Length: 88
Image (tube, rainbow, N blue to C red; front, side, top):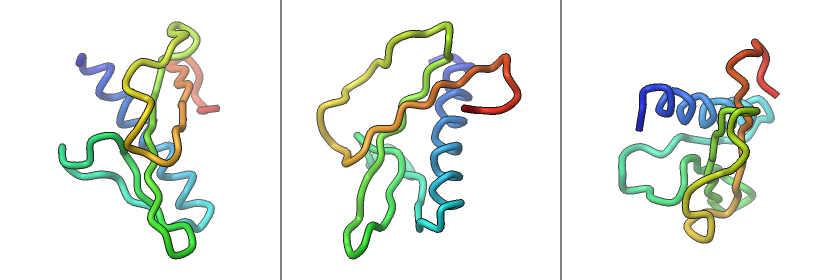
């Protein structure tokens, strides 16, 4: 993966984590390669839920790549426009 891809991935995950924390949800980033299939974990009631974050450089990219069929409870797609200063 290129540096730009790594930065986009990290930016998307941190945007989602920040939004969850802003909403008062206890959420944490996955650490290390053992959490295949998810990027963020949070508590919903008494249950732990997992989130897979996919980030694309929008509007240049139009598709989300990767395994999207198992290993997580929620999928969040972040459209990251590097030309705009505010994420949407």
